[in-house]
Image (cartoon, rainbow, N blue to C red; front, top):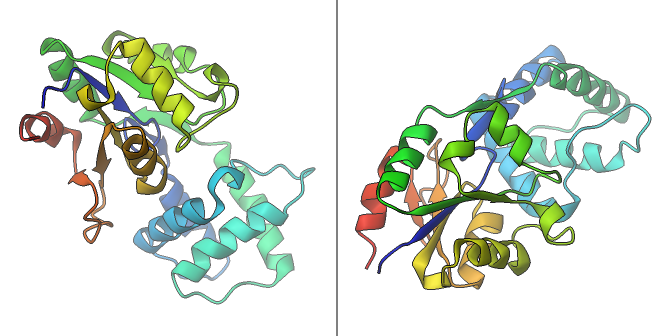
Length: 236
């Protein structure tokens, strides 16, 4: 198989939050006397994101309905086997999360730019497929990724559709002028990135930076973007 185009997820694939979401979650829980390890927090976050799908919350504000955020945070705790706090405590935790999120910035993973550069040097088209509900070009410019990605597709480009729905992947294929069998998509969520890519015939690659998905056999799996070029070479 000759791969002509490689698409990338955004969060936890090319960039991460600083401080990372699972780190922040663990720290806030400890402030309230809840012992949640960073690794268990990350497992819980993935479980909550898979369960809630398109209804997963981004960031709570005090004037918003807290119920969807409480459900999300409770799923994170339940995945770790932790007893759920009472509602008053849970609301106070939401408020603290909101305060801490004001500190958050995007940071590019150290392996992202070298991997993108190697692909570009090979003549491979590179693109971003993000579920961020915004125009991504200004963010790429600010992080120095514009020259390494040929285009970016987000829900604003496909009438609000997001992964794993087909339109966002098909738009990336259109912009790359590539057939599905000529493309790969790299992302950290098998239930959005993996499922969505596979459903349209794109080769899915799961980046498992924290070795959480060892039992995931349905997709090719890498633990660093450094491994991506060699993995692409090994595709049948």
